[in-house]
Length: 115
Length: 109
Image (tube, rainbow over all chains, first blue to last red; front, side, top):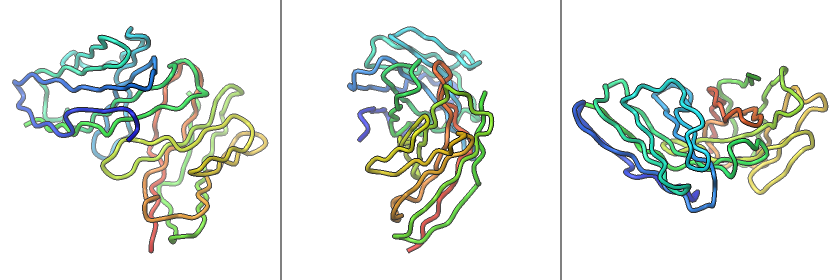
């Protein structure tokens, strides 16, 4: 248990569906992150939020839409996804996104399959 | 971006020490060296980090070369539960954690 909780753990969705991934942390951290991990590939950073403000968007397609309503919650809204978007989606948090002398805590991930 | 180089895989026997190397010849003075590991079907887990001095915690030790161009993660007694992919990452301020391909550690009974 890392203190970062992701739901659901598994999700199967059709290409025309709309779904949301949820991430929650009660560690008092100010920064939250979405990563994508495709099969046989390294983790790719998607979005970074600091104090509920998006500070980084790494050329992610608009079919992925993040939302950070408060410092404890982070969502990833999904719509009209493609089969190649099937991957493990990981949420992480850290005390401060600008401080390298601190560690990040990751959730267990949501295994997404797009059919 | 400062890069790291790690072997693709390493093998160890249970209860033996494991030394996982990482080269980072282009490291800058403000880069912290972080290690994470990822067990099968789980998210990455923080292991240890340091700047210049060697570091110890309950999970592992981090030995940093004097010139900081390389480091070694030391697991003092490997267990089967230590089988994972280990990532060595350089972290500087507003540069986020960027993961490479890591070293896959195989532990045999």
